[in-house]
Length: 91
Image (cartoon, rainbow, N blue to C red; front, top):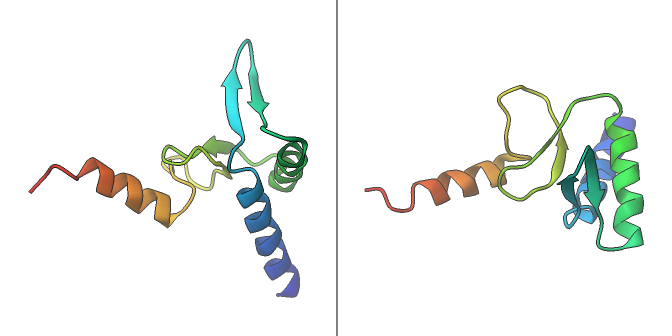
């Protein structure tokens, strides 16, 4: 249980630190990092995710491990934000 909690905390820290990292597609996928610290955290996050498939959040652009094929947002907050933004003009 303690190790699971530690993993969750490390994932949360790494996710927060790589919030400004953006993917770039040239001839292959690469990453743009605004500073060295975010590059280090990106390496850490990629190491933690291992071979699990990854996706970029449609709302905030954060890298997250893919747990389902139909998941397009990193967490419930981003999902709700995107949902509310799509439905702003409806009655």
